Length: 258
Image (cartoon, rainbow, N blue to C red; front, side, top):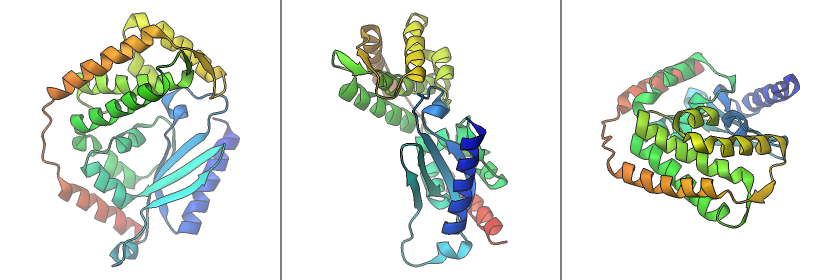
């Protein structure tokens, strides 16, 4: 990322804090740039967690817990309130684990470290696999069954499939970088196809089309069957500790009240 773009993003975050009267405690890149295969015209998917002043959370009326700041050809910026984030973490929402593990961090804080230190304790294998498997199946069904396909969509299927395999093998959240998933989980004979796709993806517009890659389609179909079978054998019951998350929430609010 260029220094100019990083500076623009930092200015946007400062603007959000000032206009919304919030404090951003964690902000990352969540899209193809964090996955390691951005196209020349990829936008920046900026995601953040914020906290408001303590009195905001004491209102009787329902309050908004999302900030949608900007969406254009260059920047896609939005964030979640810390209360929303912790509630979703208690339910093992896969998005939070990705945001916590992004290799591109625009800013973070000691407040977020309290969350990061315990986040993996709330990871539920079944939730993660269901999420990634549903994503893979949906994208495969919609984009990759015709003779001519949008090549970038292979990554929107292979990436979640490798995430499922990582979870089944390692019982922990998968890394965001696709290269790490490929190295750990993809059959060696298929890697040349993926490497070629990576080259196309990183040097072509987002809309690049090409012929369907039958070996990858066969791998996808077999993988979906394997993962569904593996999911049936998963036994990942646990008692999530909401009191611990309540304590973290109160500590973060105390810091915001100073």
